Image (cartoon, rainbow, N blue to C red; front, top):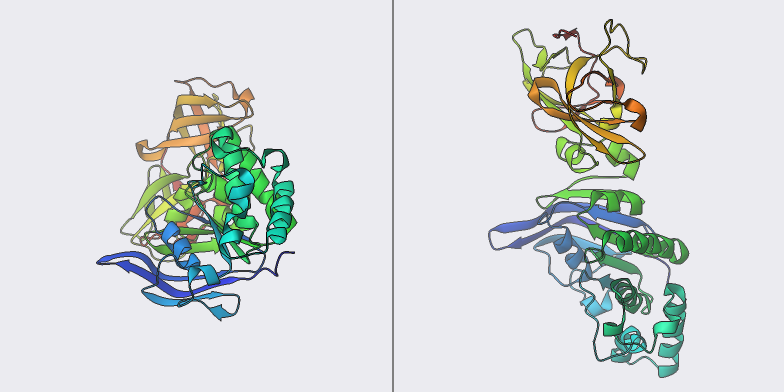
Length: 375
């Protein structure tokens, strides 16, 4: 029987390797029974943070709690956490059953109890028919399930996943991701899933923590992270295709100017960045009288189609956007545009983002007070 899930709390946790700060003043609360995805670029400190929770690294400062217990000085084996690594690290000379039960044997667990737990875990993961095989006789996905089962068989209070799907091909990655989500629903155990793949993080995590350069920048639901990014880094890192951006500079009258757009911001800004998701743009053919686009919006700028990615259910249309920046527009396959065509592009300003000079989100961009264009 699984123990009650335990939360994980980080309070000002730091980790320094000499002059290099891998984790800086990290504050994080993972709720009991939650699946939290920790995402960020390679080298941002997310795996180090996971190793700190597991006890494989000692913090340089701050406090780590598992449940109500401070575990800074608790040995890894006494934290009741299980870690699943990127490499499967299975013992090649042992059978699947031997690999699953190895950790329990080391701890001196009774043989009958080991067999009971191995059988139960194999049933959950669909490994029943593979128990007598060795790792070399398994596919990559099967090996990953054995590595997962080796952690599960201990009935840990917290699961820690360190990029466990990185070695799998795209199709197998998707299936294994679904298996982990289903496993979480059935077990209800606290899980922290580290990945550099933002699609993986958004699809798996009940909440997502975005990390960069050793700092946790934002924690929220996948929808909040995507629709209300706290800063420009989060906005640019999360989302595929990436968010469109335009630099704005301050004019003498306090307005912001970039490309064809002039804005009157609610507060004084020396500079800013306008950002718009590809699906928050509408595109239509250039008409002789462009009073309004078929999408029902006033056209905001004219552009030339550079190339088109046909993806079946949608098209990603690359256009020469404002200030000669390439912008990407999500469009229906029925658009009928071709490279070289001139088109109208309109912006859903209410869903746009305006970021200040420090990268922090100011809010949505106001509708331009002037559009300097010849459409």
